[in-house]
Amino acid sequence: MKVKEYALVIDMVECCGCLSCSVACKQEHDLPVGPQWITVYRDDIRMIEGRPRQRYTVTHCMHCHAPKCMKACPENAISRRSDGIVLIDASTCTGCRICMEACPFGVIRFDEGRGIARKCDLCVSRLDKGKQPACAAACISHCIHAGEVAEVATKVGDNRLRLWRNETF
Image (cartoon, rainbow, N blue to C red; front, side, top):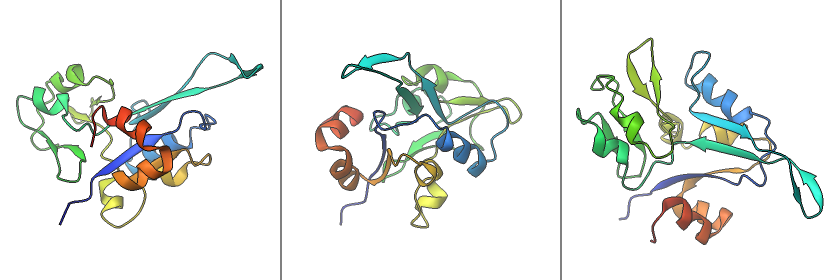
């Protein structure tokens, strides 16, 4: 039996910049003021189809198929589960920050209080209970698609998911 592999993809064309994803993530993970595991950036207004439009760029851990952060970690504190979720083991992390430098998306944050690296865990405890990640559940634009890769591919299009994963199935 094939193990389910999870993906989280954001359709940034549909994002309205409300920040509900970021707030939900901070609440779910009890994050202090400052660090965010999902960040919404306002892009410059530009003309789209003859009208001025505001767009947003949203960054989050991509739970890479071949995580550079995991490869770079000298303590082996980062692992990728068989379902594709990339996790940092807080008890093993020494806070060296090498993973932060290795991450091509710049989404790993340093927790000053705990002295360790932290990042999106795809709300693994919610997923394990059959729930959506907090960011997806809170998204009022319904532009965050989370779930099994095949399910997400149906929602956002197979070609876009391949670009996201930077590989072919």
